[in-house]
Image: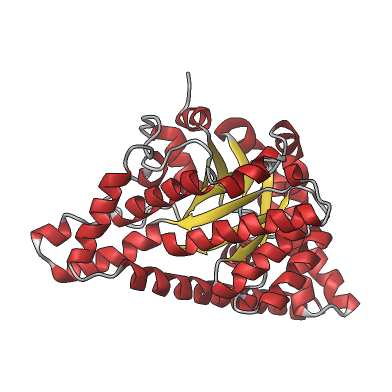
Length: 368
């Protein structure tokens, strides 16, 4: 019997798990999800690692060794997290080989405090790539204005990049341009374009959370009827842009020389409103050449009962534009909302990063 996760894979959706921990790696959980849930990649962020180190029982020995060696807290964080990513990369290596590098990817993020510092982001991206030491790692760089130049520079070094914290169509257009520029520079630097992959992580549920709050405050029947529609409409228009931009002459030149399209990745796909279907941001954004990165709860719900109904994105663009126009007509600025969400997204990851530092500091102190 075909499962919903297999149906999504058949459409062309790559399912990546939005979680990683050493416990998951060592218990065999990750290998089980590959075998039974069609999982073909993993994304991580500071929040995920803070949770892993706060609750995991398998980091003690390494942290004690790092403390004894005189490592700083930041060095200890990067040692433990990059080791987890390297181990996950090894588990996913067969998927990487089978898909010619498109999947089998594990992402690790540059320190979020560097989100507005391009030079420091570039330097740390190179360090992380070297530290993990696996071809199938992806370095996550946030899509801030400062991050755009860093994305191009890191790609130019032949390093695959997961661009994160994208909320607006306008910023997504800049991300695609940064990616194409990166491929052009990588080619000039003598890199094989076929080896370079990228995804553009477009956040979904956070858009609904913020806009729904504003629609509820307006309170009219017309306003309330638009709740929980903005995130999907926004993402569908991002997919339209993806199709358009990679059909351009500039992109086609690179694709003809072995370059890869930068696939849209739907992030923040866990449903925040309990009144909504728990697989809403999976089934309604199913389309070929996309990645959907899911927390385990969403993954299990998808496997259990997601009503997959084929490609849900192509052919919806006019309706998506009408939805966003209707929201704007109520005085809600999509640009203002997405600008706010980008800033909040960076701030939230900085909070998680500081929590991670505190957790590791306490563990190092207790081991001495």
